[in-house]
Every structure is written in C-alpha cells, then in structure tokens.
Length: 453
Ligand code: PHE
Image (cartoon, rainbow, N blue to C red; front, side, top):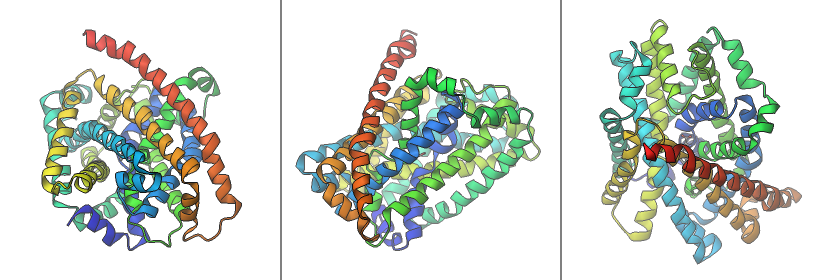
C-alpha cells in the first residue's frame, strides 16, 4: 500500500487529514529549530515577529496550497501544470529540489535525536553532556545515525505507509504534548526560570530596531519551515481532500496546533538553557541537545524521561521526514513512470549522500549553509511563486475552491485575494531580499573562514 492509498483511505475523516498535516508540520522545526532560532535572534522580539508571520502570511499561504491541491487532485508538478499552465510545472521541479535539500540535513539532526534516545537508555550523556554532543554530532556516529534514520524513512516510503504509522502519529502527537507539558512544569522550577521567561516572553523592541534585517528573514523562514509550506507538501495532502471541507478552518486548526507545540518547546528549552548557564544568545544548532541532556542527567528518573522524550521527538521527526521524501518519490513516479521501490532507494540514497558532509562537519557550519538556503531563501521563493499564481493568475479558480464547503464568503474572498496580491507579496519579496543579503554575509563571513580552515 502506498502513502497515496493510505491518505485516500484516511482522508475520509476530517481528523485523518488534520492529523496527517499536523504530522508533517510538527517535527524538528518545533522542538529543535524554533528554540534555536529564537535564541539566535534575540528572544521575545523574534517570537513576536514570528507569530505575526504565522498569522498574516502562514495562514494565507496554507490556504493557497490547499486550494491548488483540492482543485486539481494532483501532486505538485501536475497540480501546477493544471492550475497555471505548462510553464508552471517547473516550479514543481523547484519543490522537489527543496525537499531533497531539506531532507538531507533533516535526517542528520533526526539522527542526533535517535542517538540521544539510545544515549538515554545507556546513560551515555549523563557524565559530560557537552563532550558527548561533540563526539556524537559529527563523525562516524553522526553518519551512522543519519544512515539509520534515512533507512527507516526509505523503508516506510518504499513499502508504503502502513496504518501503524498513522496510528503511531495519532498516539505520539498527544504523547509529545503531554511529555512537553511535564518537562515544562519541571523547567519552571529551575533556578533562572523567571529570567528565562522574561527573555522569551517580553519583547525588547530595541532588539527589533537593531536586528530587523536578520530577524525578519529568520522569522519568515521559520514560519514556512514549521508549517511545511513553500514546497508543495500541503498541495499534495489537500489533493486527497473531500469536497465539503472548510479549508480556512482546517488551516487555522493545523496552524494553531503547530504553533502551540513550538511555543511549549520554548517554555521547556529556555529555562533549561538559563539553568545550565549556557545562555540563550548563541545556542547554535547543538546547544538544545547539550542542555536537554544536561537536565535529564540531573533530575530523578531523568534518563527515563529523556528516553521517552527523545523517542517522541524522533517519531515527530519521522512523520515529517516521510512527507519530505514522499513528495519527491510520488512526483518521480507520476512524471517518469519509475517503480516505487527503485525510486525511493535512489532518492533516499541521494539524500543520504547530500547530507553526509553535514554529518561529518564538527564545526556545524555546513548545517547553517544548507538550512539557511532551504528555509530562508528557497521556501520563501516557493511561496512567492505560488502566491503570484493564485492571486494574480488563477484567482477565480482559487476563490471558487475556497468557497466550496463554506458557501458564499462575499467580499471576504476579494479581501483575501488583495491581501495576498499586494501586502503579503511585497512583504515576502522584501524578506527574500533580506534573506539573500544575510546569506551573502554568511557565505563571505563564517563560511569563507570555515573553508579557509
Ligand atoms: N515542518 C516540519 C518540521 O517542523 C519540517 C518540514 C519542512 C517538513 C518542510 C516538510 C516540509 O519539522
């Protein structure tokens, strides 16, 4: 049974669709990338801009993808060809490229998560969490666990997603929430929690004034990344929808759940970071692992809690990874008529190779090279193109689609179209320019230094 069959089967219920979309959305983006971005970009000031992006741009962008998918009932390349005309199919090609790039390093970080699950069972990180991270994050361990995670994703996508995966997601998303609440309650008792909340929750507008050039593209990139937008996943998922659903309401529920889980992760991570006196200012891609491991090593039954936490975390990553790989595999099957198993093996193998340098880089520079390009530049570009298509070219079809299942929404539809046409697009284009400038700085700064050794 392929993912498509499972999706068709399960989309019979609204819950099934919402769950699958939440499964794709909730992952490393919420528990790893979000706190790491908040830390790098100045705390609550970033949080505020991020929430604005989620509401003002994430919601319309998700509606755009849903309306294209449900209208065409096709995967991205075909969907764009039908919705926009032949030339638009190349954008589907761009989406494949983005998925390929994201999955390559996503699997490396997910490998760390699996490694930390094992480390909780063996107590490996209890001695010296910092040294532990350095030994497992890059080198043979990292490569091995990158391979394990990639192989697990390949196996599921190649064999088709069994009902068990969806059932697991159904069990694990609530389990993840319960665990995060428990850890957040524990985190509240740590010394320095008050200071951490202040950092996380009360915005310092001075920071926005000083750093808006980097806060804005980071916040936008994070919004698209965490909602799985900008590369056609939500097009694919909506292509399996029944007709009578209210797309706007579903988007709001999915976005609400994803944002809630990310917010909760911040309530866990910041008190722990402050207590470990790592400080939030430059946590980097690894500090969250070091800090969480340090905390689990200290509390009573912490390793058990750690094992459950990292297990839930790994499952969240797996449901996202499946959607990342499946979107490429299903398109290759549709467009080139390749069989599922060879297609999955070749694509997964390629993703592994592309991610291998990241797994071998102990300086954690390559991960920024990949991640900034994918999230801040490519996902934003993908969304801009989709919005141009829907708001300027195929708006009648899009409006028609959104009203299916809702009824006549009157002038609200026009307001939505005009919102996307001008302010949303302008904001995104400005964001993209800032992102490209930031990336250039990164390439000529830290990356150039790293290259020079
Ligand atoms: N949204 C997923 C997460 O937050 C990652 C992802 C990005 C999945 C893009 C699919 C597409 O972990």
